[in-house]
Amino acid sequence: MKNSFQDIIHQKVPVLVDFYADWCGPCKMLAPILQEVKAELGDDLKIVKIDVDKNQSLAAKFQVRGVPTMILFKEGNQVWRQSGVLQKQELVSVISNYK
Image (cartoon, rainbow, N blue to C red; front, side, top):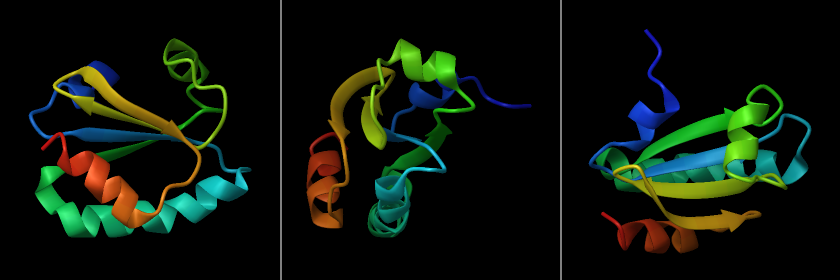
């Protein structure tokens, strides 16, 4: 059974949602950075990738106008948002504020 988006973002650990598209160059650059962030933070973070082309209603709900857009949720609340590519240390530093 697939969890709903609401179930996913209502977790104790921060959930970083990466809104991306397959045709997006910067999105491809961000993917390995997110893997490094996950490797460093481990169970202190959940990362969810959302393809905006396949999930247009969700992208519209969160007013995602450009990709990549990352939104950090803590227990269902949006606590941070950024469009574009960030480096690993910048992301780790932001996420660490919400652990």
